[in-house]
Length: 324
Ligand code: PMV
Image (cartoon, rainbow, N blue to C red; front, side, top):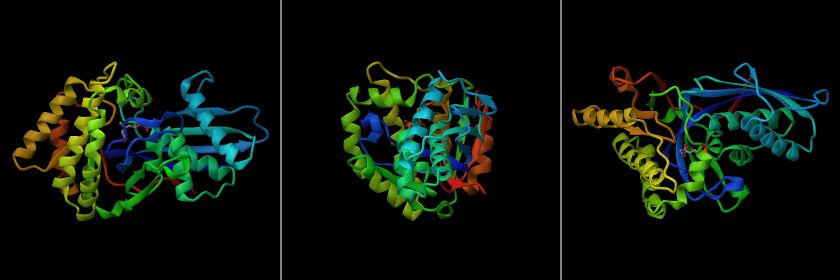
C-alpha cells in the first residue's frame, strides 16, 4: 500500500481568483494553465495498519500536528480514505524540486502529487477526471496539475463537474516560463485569503465579464502557437488579478518594488524587438513567457536585473505521474 507520484506546478494564463463555493474550491470561472517542467513535487504515501497516526515529512523534516500544513494534508488524506473505504493511517514523505520560500505556489504540485500517490497506494484506480476532481479539493489549482501540458479547468456546476483536462500535450509548443525570483520570504497572504476577498473588489464582476473573450483568445493562441496573442492576454489577466487583489477589502499587495521593475523591463525589451511577456500569480515573482529559442538571451537579461535572486527556466511538462 505504497506509491510515489510526481506532479508539476502550473502557471495560470487565465487566472482562478475567487470561489463560488470555498468549501469545495468551486471557482467562478474557467481557467487555463501550463505545467512547469522544473517546479514539481515528489510525494510518497505508505498506508499501513501498523501506523497509529498519520506522519508527514516535508523536505526531510517532520511536520508538527498542530501546523496548518499538517491539518490540510490530513484532511485531504481523509477524502482519499473515504473513497477507498479505508481507515489506515499513512506515512507521507514529500519534497519540492524548487525552494519552498521562493514565492512559487507549491500547493498545486503538492496536492496533485498527494492525490495521485494516496489514491494509488490505497488501490483506487481513478480516471484522470476523477483525480482532477479530487485534487481540486486540496487546492483549486491542483486540479490543473493532473492532465498534461496546456490545461483548461472547467468551472463546472458542482463537485463532480469541476475538473481540468488537457488542451494540448507538453510537446505541442516550445515555449518557456522563466521565473524571476525576487524574495526569499514566504508569501504574505495565502491564496485562500485572496480568493475569499476577491468578490469584495469593485472590479471583480467586471473582470468576470471579460473572461469569455479572453479564454477564446488563449485557446486560439495555443492552437495556432501565437505568442503575441497569448502574451497580450496573459499580461491583461495578471494585471487584473492584482488590480482585484489591491482593491479588495482589505487590500492585498503581493508585489514588491522589484516586481514592477521587471514588468517595465519586459515591456521595454519587447519594444526593442525581443518577444517576451509577463504573468504573475499571488506572489511577487514574475513569470516571463517566451519562445524557447529566445530563452537564453532573455534569461541572461533577467538575471542581470538588480534584485533578481534566481531564475528557473521551465518548459511545458506532462501532468502528474506515478514514479516507478
Ligand atoms: O489553488 P490556489 O488556491 O493556490 O489558487 C491559485 C491562485 C493563482 O495562482 C493566483 C491563480 C491560478 O489560477 O493559479
